[in-house]
Length: 222
Image 1 (spheres, rainbow, N blue to C red):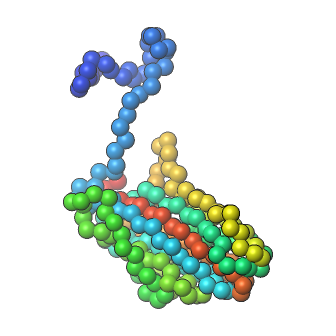
Image 2: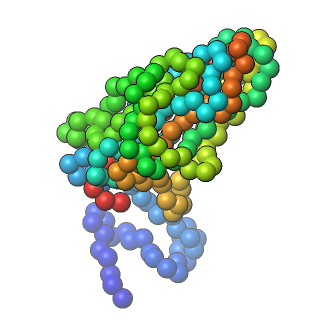
Image 3: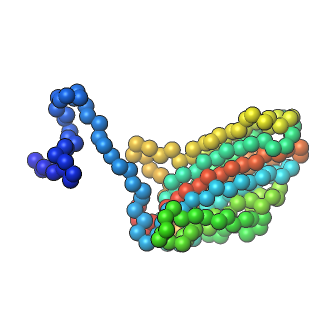
């Protein structure tokens, strides 16, 4: 049997069948969770505010991330929120997230490029080999890109528009990357990524504002 010596004390964490002791038979492990190793690359984060327009089109793209390089992009956080900011006709709607393959060109029309932050000085310059865009106020959404959506969304934030602005309700936050207990996060190779889009046509009298929080890591292998 292999023996592991404690680095700072004589206390050891047993692996396998626990023995009885002062604190019972099941002892908790003390762990320090560290970020995904990034080498010469890095971890990055950004938050954007996306305002809808009247008659926002069905399936109009609001936000997107595309891996433009040969490394891997690991999606570590994606959080969605929605807030009604103008009176509207009662309507149920949502914003939906789709994984995309054959993502060979990012959108070029009705787009804004956000300023992205590195999580630590010394990491590769933001945004790494990644293109991130969000909608710049157009009913048609962002256009001009080339991509193939998966057949179903991987996350949906539903909300209901009211005739009068609801000043007390915010929809979300929806954690789209709740990967815990051994499940696998989204890992995007070159020319893959994801989009967030408006699901159905908004009625003319309408106003929603969406808030999207994103963090990701660029790594050579995962």
